[in-house]
Image (tube, rainbow, N blue to C red; front, top):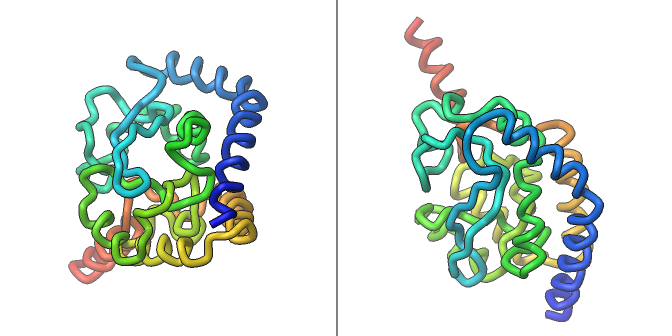
Length: 212
């Protein structure tokens, strides 16, 4: 598609400008992370890229250095115990994702697209195969992120990623972009515990009510 070529130009231009404009905020966050806890400022993790290739995604570190590696947040018994004080703020505001500007700049990611799965999230990867969602560049944000984010179960998240692939266009990307801003302001769908976490909490709450 012609738009995919234009999309890459847009990604490069906006990520380059974003890196310059946001550099003061990035420096402040780097200082805050260093003062808050021991460990590196950046956290890198193997993720699934276009056509199921592997790349290392960059994030500001939000967890303690003794957190189990390559484990999705929703598989940690009590994720809150691993998250640093500044990390809670970064995750709630999505500012931990800022270093991915570099992933976008070098062409590993796009601004808009399906969020890259962990290399060992086989269930999500397999579901996305059904919709061709592994055949496009992963994004900083996407259609699934403004329609539930952490709340979504695997099958629904993959289906929404498929809807993005079917409707990919400049207009749809703009809808995702501005929808993301609204979601961040509202903190919609942010649930520590990862995929389907809200549903799990509701089930647990219902079970507790029944037991009482």
